[in-house]
Length: 116
Image (tube, rainbow, N blue to C red):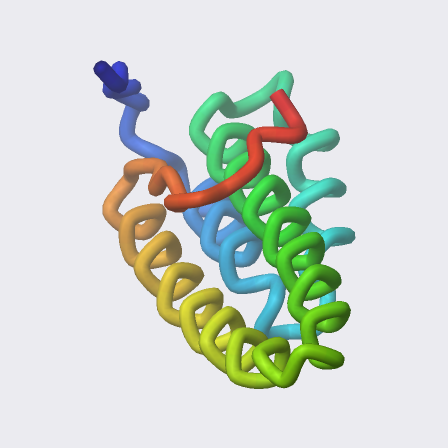
């Protein structure tokens, strides 16, 4: 059973940092931005730290899944899997950003929890 974390109402810039962490793949810094936000804000805001950690784990997982798909290109199934993975990553990042804007933290499915 998954526990639900209740956060205090996020202040102005906290929502922005949480949103940017999830949407960092769209602006071209999928690992760097969530890592910096997580390291900078983990002592100040549990809300931002949880969102940044979740986004970092997701982006790392997508990278690892992409490597596996790249290897499968030889078997002619890697290219379609890469397209599906890319589309799913975009949709999930948008869903997570909407959840973060509402003051919560989205748990991405099939994500390896590498950063705890």
